[in-house]
Amino acid sequence: MHKWLPYLILFFSLNLSAQEYLFIDTFSYFDNRQWHINEFGFDGIGCNMTAKNLEISENILKITLDRNPDTSKYKPFRYNSAGIQGVPFYKYGYFCTRMKSEIIKGTVSSFFLMNEWKSIDWIHKEIDIEFLGKNLESVQLTTHLINTKTNNLQSASVTIPLKFSIAKSYHDFCILWTPDSVAWFADDQLLHVEKKFVPDEPMQILMNHWNADSSVQGTTDWLGGLINPDELPSKVYYSQVAIQNLDQYKNRLTGLSNLEILETEIYPNPVNNILCISTPHICNASFISISGKELFYFKLNAGYNELITSQLQSGIYFIKLNYRKQVVIKKFIIKKE
Image (cartoon, rainbow, N blue to C red; front, side, top):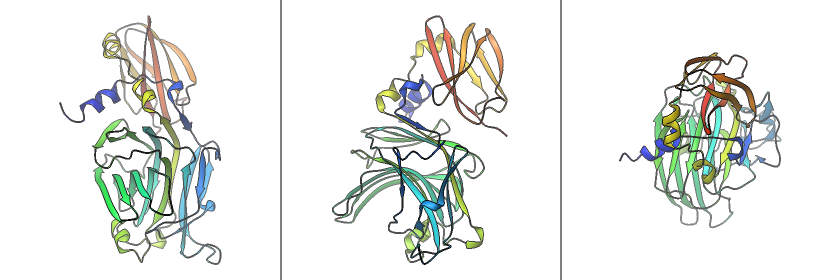
């Protein structure tokens, strides 16, 4: 069996419901119970982290990296940016974001998990999704195990080419973290599975955007050099974050028997204005938002059906099909041109 096959079977045989999420945030406001704004730096960073460089508007959390307008207040760097971290800790699960990165060369944007920071004898553990401004058509996926006392760095990292530019439109990126492995997904497609240096303690979600410190050569080289100030501002956008624990994730399976009976296909995916649905049976159906709200109810005919989706905004949705006592829920994405 191919090493990725169990993940593919699990991922493509989903039965989701609103009750199966630990947490969903669509950023209608900044929830202080769930998020904390970081205002501290770290080795290799070349900007001050400030609350002023983070904003929420129209259900989008935006982080902007730009010139530092007040060097008397924000020291020691010429640039400012921002980052946030989740308040809760989670041990294993399925962690997703929908994001877009309009970032420039010399910078990085991220969605990642990290264990609790300690000032001494910290065993730093991390799972990363990172986008580098030097190539916006690829993503870097990493697991870290760093002993800060002995300076022993263990990392497994790959750079995966994408079929799109992360700067052009929003895309979904997910981390499936289990006791034995980490798997990463982009727009429902498996990117990579890693079994080395898998963290084994609770971690928080972090999202940030930063540039390299000119005095740290290794970081500067990694990000493709120093930034060009004339290309600023550099921006990253997050439209949602969703989390499931492993039991919730596994319970989404419908079972092959249900899928075989309904034999339902939905396409195209992503969809713009018309969603095509092919099913061998007459059945009741509904659209469900990512928050679990049922939006529209309708009946599908046996065979080919077309549903108008122009009234829905861009984002992640589900279609729920009821046939006799069986239920199948499939995920689709609306992407406006």
